[in-house]
Amino acid sequence: MADELWVGTSWKMTKTITQGRAWAREVAAVPVPDGVTAFVLPPHTALAAVRGCVPPGHRLLVGAQDAHWSAENEWTGEVSVQQVADAGADLVEVGHSERRLGLGEDEDVVARKVRAVVDFGLVPLLCVGEPAAVRQAGAHVDHVAAQVTSALALLEREEVYDVLVAYEPVWAIGPKGAPAEPEDVAPVIAAIREAVGRSAEGASALGVLYGGSVTRDNATAMVSGAGVDGLFVGRAGWTARSFLDIVSMVGRHAGDR
Ligand code: 13P
Image: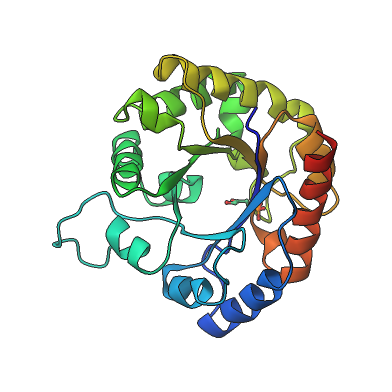
């Protein structure tokens, strides 16, 4: 297990720049508890504004929800890793299921993006997770392990230590999702740790997080019962108060470890 616990939120396609600044000012006014690193992934449009609201040294990192793998310039409408770094990103999410399933991102694109994020010295937050049918067929552990293996295929062993992984079962995400129980999650987290070790000669990831319908009601149970190094929150992180409450729950668990 990682020494540090992580808790972050992706705003997905929500919030204006003004709304983003208001959230960031409220969250940055409160210190992140010892043993915890927090992060927020605004839409690209609000990234620089949110970064500007976080004082230097505050343990709220800022990241991007995606970035293109190419450093070349002929990709209309895309945003490169260099550009999100320039806007203030410390980390870059890669491979969320909404992009894999809704926008056709395949394993090759995910691996290239992970490589590009590492090349630029930022932390990739690699998302993996199985659809409901795969879980029902009992193939979820193999499915997720294979996603991890192919996503890390372009990295050297030492680089894997700087990768965050988030297990986000597709069936647990969003308003139509059914919250997972810690016992649904724990075996997959263990399999992710094994897959990371297998693909990188015994290396471990920076952290393995859980995401999918995390709320103030289930955050403590999930962070203490699923063998995770933290939580990756969607909707419950979109108000500053709710996000701060979840950060402080994770902080209490960090203090108990
Ligand atoms: P929800 O917490 O809204 O289910 O979203 C999780 C997620 O997809 C985070 O990336």
